[in-house]
Image (tube, rainbow, N blue to C red):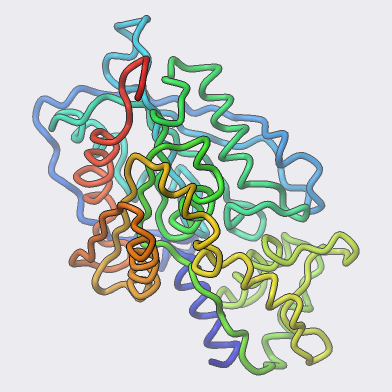
Length: 358
């Protein structure tokens, strides 16, 4: 695979939506409104993340977060609730993803159809390069621990949660599916149930041969903001490099690209490979066995179904209980329906809704 095709694959697998007109309005199957559904309360807050502080790109440590509180939250001041943390995909933020999964309608619909009440939290992890990869980087910030520690700690201290791993769920789609996979493997002490939707970036990608035109575009960028001027299909390289091959000794972008002076940088390729979950899943089997439930799904018209299947098969080899479904649809067509009628019931079944959990 040459690098131009590679970058097309990277963008296609990272992206569930985009700011550009042609990409922003992804079509999703919207479940019908459930009659009698009670409204949830929506709070838009900002959380300061110590983990993101001091990054070399100047990325803000103050992150936008949307919190959905169940219908009974305001009525019963003594009740505590499980929490589901939802991770968005590449090129969008929590606000845009909330539109794609049609919340709060789908949350309200799930509750009306019998799902246990829970708090839903959607954090924004978009950065100057359009996606953090939910990874730990000195260049753009430690977004992995923003989710696993800072965000969880804030929600537990400011809302009436059941502050135990058995009562916390993690779900993500596309880049968010990658994030749910990565964080889920590494932080099984924090989360108790895991739902992985159409995950991107699970396997190692070969950079392929050098392409001078693309390299020239990449090297023309001197700041994160300037990355917006280059070809959209090339831009995702910066998101991956900032997350997986950061370099504090390489200003002004503080990252290393796969090619330098026309030569492949094998150390960079190795760093990218080290961040592919299918290369390290074997190291986290004992952690994955701790989960109360793991689910993976992907559309039958989604190119990501191949790697999603491999992840499911890897878990099966080790006897890690998990459900896996290839459903009719594209990468984005069914995401709202899946959230209401699959993710929410799954979390309802698997998250502990009691003060004392087994």
